[in-house]
Length: 149
Image 1: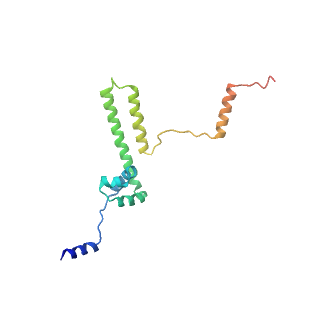
Image 2: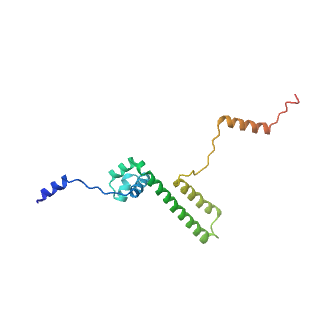
Image 3: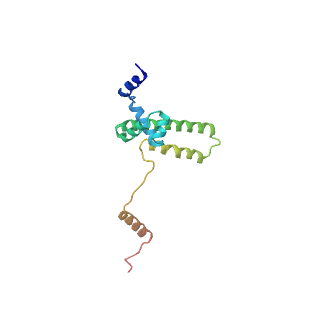
């Protein structure tokens, strides 16, 4: 078979695409969502067109995405705990309260965010409720006697 014939056979033969695991797809989707599809392609070697298609179909891989986020949160928690242990062991005498609280302030919200937990607590108060609260506070601080009039 000549080179030309081989090229024709190769051109008309059905293309075989790699079969990526759901875990690989989920990890790549997470990566692409954070740094972009093209950069994810550069890091993984997976064609950028494939990554764009996966991003469009991300709901199919959402279970794997969730599991990977939880795994990442667990890794961050482990790193935070190890860092805190080292910080406490090595720098207990020299670390000040601000440094220790700063480390905690950074790591805990990151873990909560990855686990889908709230990173802060917010309370919503309706206007009517707020009006009652304010009026009650004003009445308590400024009692007016209506009996003396």
